[in-house]
Length: 506
Image: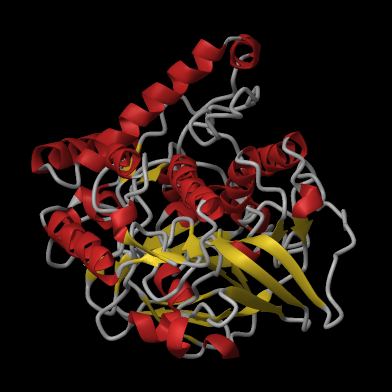
């Protein structure tokens, strides 16, 4: 990891348990990334103190701890990629890089005294609901067991890396690196590198690789829309001081960023706005690329809003370097020292960089969670795809909730804002559970079905419902988008209060 990133905390608080070696607590939060930390902060502010944060890694930070490839940074302004209750940090850049985001995570943990609740190196491999006791029993990979009334899963949908099952991949003689699992000792100097993928991680990692490598091949199955990254610069000292001491300055920055991201979302449902963004991307493309052949290779042929656009000012210039070649074809197979594309292009390489992102749908579907009557998440997901209420809970899985679960994500805005909205709602759920002395709370199947059907009707009218639109958030089981059916404003309205008629209470 970068030298700027703080080391993982080693805090360990002795755990209390019963004679059977089971640790009991009222609430378990899974994950010490932004989702888990925000959930814990909300709960503590609501008066909950008997809680644990279980993290599989050796330290906090979640996806920003794991993703530390060269060029890794946010694609929304730093002031918008921060919590509204803790945003006065004097960011060094308008779009901060990975070490600074991780540093921000540690500042949050210190400010809200979260590490006393954290248990690192605790990978939960089994969640089972005990119907008689109305409790969840959690088992870690090393055999430790935890008993709790409520579970809040900040699993992080962009955590498990996705590497396509390409024939011959295991026989490749050189190095293979996924951007999610970057090797800090890897030196690209003099290397011949194939970068697989063309979305955000590829656009970020390719320019620094091209600075040092002898040759870089971009194996591009589908070109991405690339739009300008306005204001991509270091914050001057006066702006840093304003962020720290003038609350109105930071709020204005957040408001502007929110407006821009909402325009990206509006394009999903309004063709005229979609065409406007297509023109912005086309102008950016023609301004940065003069070679007609390269321009044709990187020009998308699908609706702008079908996929999350890439924001970059240095990706296209890097593609135009003499040591970079764009091959507009998907990877077909890998041989001992070569990569072969679907169009028959063969290139000798000594390193493969998999910039192929994540597969959140498969990740959620494979969670080892068993609810009522032995029903599992996997059984609950097939053959008709995911079932979830508000993207945060599932009928038949009492006292179990998720942050940014299926149907709980938005593709064109700050994930931090989504996290805040959902954790605010879930804290209301926890408060109702405590104040009413409930044993279980879960969504009613009919309320869940109503939410999903309304969502399908909404998304079918937008770009994601268009034939041929594919991306990582479309559920392969039914071809439907597993995203929040509306805007971030709509999410705010829907999560302001809990409609108890949607829930079954015991």
